[in-house]
Length: 149
Image (cartoon, rainbow, N blue to C red; front, side, top):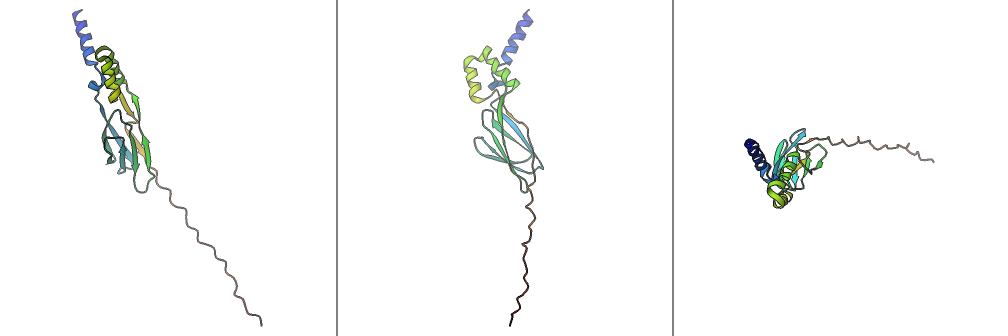
C-alpha cells in the first residue's frame, strides 16, 4: 500500500503545470522544395528570417505567420494555428491537482499548453508561370498607289 501512495505522489509531482513540464517556447521546423527559400517569420518578439531548411524558436502563445519567397517561385504565406496538445492538456490538467487557479492562469497566459500547427511547416514552391509568348503585331501592307495621269 505504501508503494502505491509513493507512486501516486510521484505522478502528481511530475504532472505539474504545462509551463513547467513543457516550457513557454517551441521549435518550428521550416522546409521547402526546393530548399534555399527565404522564410520570414512574423509574430516573434522581433522579426526573424532564415533560409530553408531552418528551425525557429517561438513563444507558444504567439500568432505566427511564415512567409516564404524564392526567386522564380510564387510566394507563399502560411498562418500557423494554435491547438492544445495532448501533453499540454495533461500539464494543464495537472494544475487541478497542484497548481490550482494560479497555475491555470499562468498556463493560459504563456500558452504553455499550446502547440503550433502545422509543425513542421513543409511547402512545395510553385514556379512562377512564364509570361505568355509575345505575338508580333500583324502589319497590313498596302500596294503602293500608282499615280493616275
